[in-house]
Image (cartoon, rainbow, N blue to C red; front, side):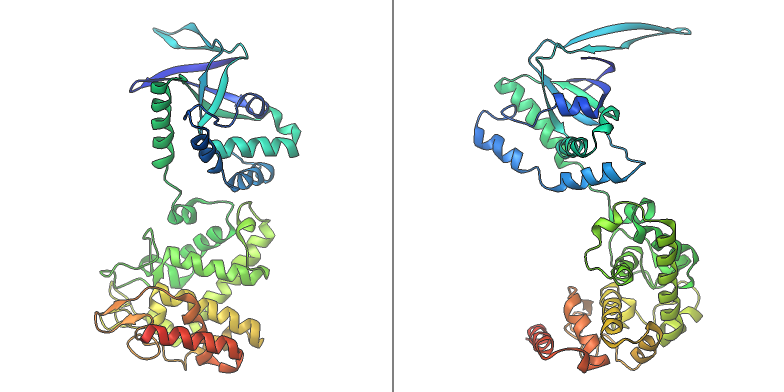
Length: 390
């Protein structure tokens, strides 16, 4: 196997950047065996770390026309790999870091970073052999099957995996073009009056910073609420697989309309929210989110179970969202009052408590119409409520 590459170095590592076809990966790249540990049990432990997540990668490869991967880091040892340098003159400059890697076929190649991608590629190729010529970027490094060589490769293995940061929820919302919930959440932030400008806060997690007196909710919490609306929209509780590949434009438009109708109806029929929208300035939410707790709807850990409760009420009663919103105005949603005191709000320390979506959802449904819950659900709710007060 001869492949063009660029040679570079960082620290005490020399590396070679190139590409491999799916077929090459399937043939030449093997799972980590005893390259990092002499003990079989430790090698087996690394193999067990390869979870079913590779199946998600397989699904991504098979379903996404715009598929793309970052580089696999592959360690090479044994055989007789040769670097054949090619001198390149371009204008007044000379380049000596371009050439070919020549493998004689006896080399052993294993992934230092990208084990799941390798397994996902192999599984996709079994299902769709015509993908064999697709190519992914790779970085080759040298490995020595000695105690010191194993130590060096282990250190790189742990560094690349330990310091790899998962994509944040905020980044998914801002950038994902496949996740239908992220797509519609962006549309809401740009076009829905309730979420425009300072009315949404772009923190990396759900809570709204205490110093923020303007926002209605956070971008992450809005996404989570829309997640629940998508479950309602498609009539399924498990939606992860529906967000991995971009849905049809027709479905995106229909879900967008569904969400806009929900949130516009929410804003126009929930009295405190309508009042909030009439306020202006950088403290427009202070009446409903303050040192006394304020209103449940103006706290992310209250708005999410409220959304869940409204969806459940619709499913059980057959009422439409607008009628549910109107009737919700009769419910007491002041956090310092029962039943929210010591459930969502610590009135002694004047701070929010840990979220309990299931209990808050059940309490909201119970307050709306206790007949919508069966006796067992009421029993569980009362037990959970009593535990909060004890």
